[in-house]
Amino acid sequence: MLDFCKGIGKQTITVYDSPGSMINLILVHYYVEALYILEEGRALPSDIDALSRKYFYIGPCESLDVIGIDFFVDAIKQIMDWFFDSSGEENKTISDIREGYFVPYLFDRLISEKRLGKKVSKGIYLYNKDKPIDDVPEFYLNPAYGRPPDIEKNTEELIENRLLYSVFSGCLYCLEKGLSSWEEMDLGIKEVLIMKDGPFTMMQRIGKDKLKENFDFLAQYASTRFQQNSFDFALS
Picture 1: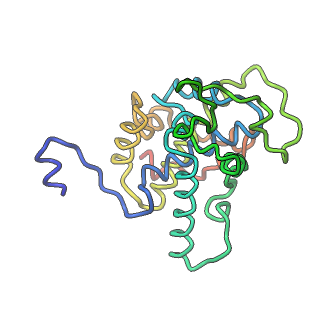
Picture 2 (picture 1 turned 135 degrees about the horizontal axis):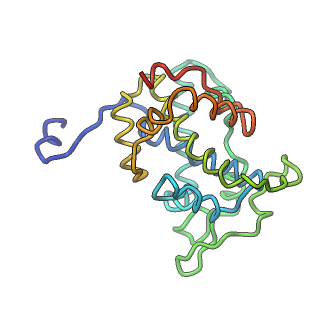
């Protein structure tokens, strides 16, 4: 297959076998971070998608609606089944795979109300002749969070960084697990999200010290899921 792809002028990437794909395992971090932001009441879907375009061609909310909410949730379940089957553990949750992660409450609400995405003209967005429209802010809130936070002056920058660093986090996780090389992940994510530069290229340009500073800030501001211990293996 590698020879065939090279023969037709395609550049290949090789990854360790896993449910869905290694690229999608990285993108899960991006998608669920968008839903965490929605559930916290910090922004509406159109805001999140607009802010994401600083780095990515397509926003996470729009992308999830195109993929299909039911399909995406099923993919998460397959990843969990694969992980725990291979580790011999049972009755675990996604937070047992990575600290600070959980299946967003909003997924349950969307599925229970049959808001499965663009294919049924309602998902994270409501659709009017294919035009995406935000629902009322209250629809997206997770009741467990209580009152929505006061909007800070730098909220937009923080949301941009949460989305970008969620992709960085997914890449570092997959590299640590040996699912592929950083060069191949860099190319794969760059092509899928149509980025100017791949995530590892961006991280190398930012540098280890600044990267750690930003991750530490997000770990304190957003969640321990952003905590990273070392970048040496990725940025050498």
